Amino acid sequence: METILEVQGLVKHFPLPGSRAKVQAVNNISFCISKGETLALVGESGSGKTTVGRCVLGLLEATAGSIRFRGGEMGKRRHVRTPELRGRMQLVFQEPAEALDPRIRIGETIEEPLRAVNLPPAERGERVAEVVDRVGLTVEILDQYPLTLSAGQQQRVGIARAIITKPELIVLDEPTSALDPTARAEIIDLLLRLQQELGSAYLFISHDLSAVRYISHRIAVMYLGMIIEQGDAAEVFRTPRHPYSIGLLSSVLLPDPSLKGLTSISLRGEIPSPINLPKGCYLASRCPFADDRCRREMPPAEDLGGNHVVRCFKHQEVAQTERAADTFEEFQRTAERILSA
Ligand SMILES: Nc1ncnc2c1ncn2[C@@H]1O[C@H](COP(=O)(O)OP(=O)(O)OP(=O)(O)O)[C@@H](O)[C@H]1O
Ligand SMILES: [Mg+2]
Image: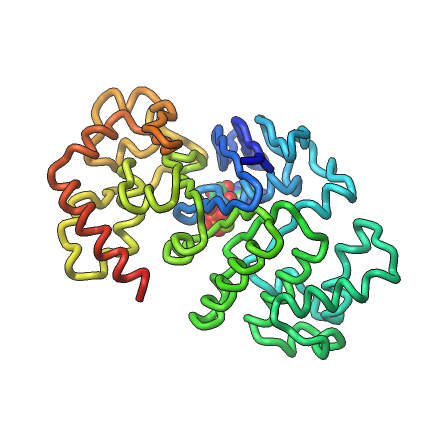
């Protein structure tokens, strides 16, 4: 499969003003996205998902690492994005309202990226009408202002604006979290359909694991700025191998009473500060499997086969734990039931 985006060893630290300390938001992350593929980035609040997305788009300057788009190095500096590159990568925001200026008519908002890629004005109107139709809106809204639209309609405008340049990659940062359940399901369906029609690759950033499972081909689980597990989405959901992934998946699904057994792999304690990261595995202080080595050394990214990659010295023990094996099966059944409901 043709690789669209290749991120190698990405690091992003934010200096804290008036101090030598820094927020270590992203710490050595590597991943690829192929043409037409969806990679989900999941993880708790503050794990660095948005920062990764913004570095990929060139909106933030990376501290270290390489970001290659279609084989070409993007460079670490922001603003390296040429107009041509701008059209080939787009962003859909979490809050539709964030992307929409209340004083600007919808038609102009949708058309704006075409100006940046220098499409002749004569061709713009037709392109706007086409994307408005594609996202399930009607041309009447073009003369309206954002505040007259529902949140779901606003997000459709945000998506129309993102696809108008026919981008090869779209970064979707929590695109459904501001929406009610009906609008959320509609937007997810729309994104799936658009991907089939347009072949764009998605970097899908989300807390919403049921949406992730529905929409993603691959999944990368982040913890404190690292990808601690990555693989085929169905496989990671079925047999997570990192204790943090198990904790994350089970915390979402635990309210279901038949999953009581899973509390045994829930994580204890507080998440360390990204300003002062521990030595060794960042999860060690919270992990029931951790030993001295985990507290001393950072586990390498290990491929378990089929590109299922885990950063955990204990993944075999995790897999072999009788209890875990039982609960995984139970977990899978329940997860399927909940997620298909
Ligand atoms: N401009 C900034 N200056 C300083 N620290 C920042 C900045 N932007 C993000 N951070 C910090 O970097 C870390 C990662 O933040 P980020 O927004 O990428 O997380 P996230 O996974 O997207 O979280 P959420 O799920 O809440 O959106 C956090 O500790 C955050 O406070
Ligand atoms: Mg975020």
